[in-house]
Amino acid sequence: MARYLVLGGAGYIGSHTVYELIANGDEVVVADSLVTGHRQAVHPGAAFERGDIRDRAFMNSLFQKYGIDCVIHFAASSLVGESVNDPLKYYNNNVSGTVSVLEAMAQNGVKNIVFSSSAAVYGEPQRVPITEDAQKCPTNPYGATKRTME
Image 1 (cartoon, rainbow, N blue to C red):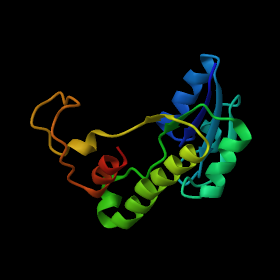
Image 2: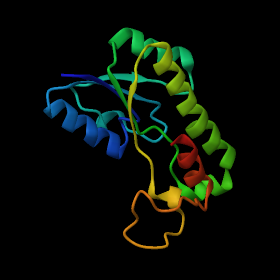
Image 3: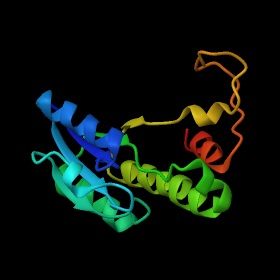
């Protein structure tokens, strides 16, 4: 049994992942700002902490309070159109947020992370289906931030 910290665990994909982890017998802590996530989507068996991944004190408190073994990172702004209109929001939230997560992990001795990227890192694919060795050439700020986060 492991103790997972699921960032963005009140979002669609994150909440479904939490349900699977708990069904597997794992302990789960969900951290979400609820800017786009929904508190009611969080499994009742998961611990829940509301906060922003860019807040280093918040992130450190999670590792210290819960003794996390692994991070699953879904927390990101993810609307392509919005990223074109407000790219700085996407770089700030997605890239700076990931830096904050990685620094907190390092400070607290946590070495395991599962990162949820996006097909947007490939831009317009040269062939379908897209394989992981395909050229990465994002065509919008959202895809560019996901590539940077990788």
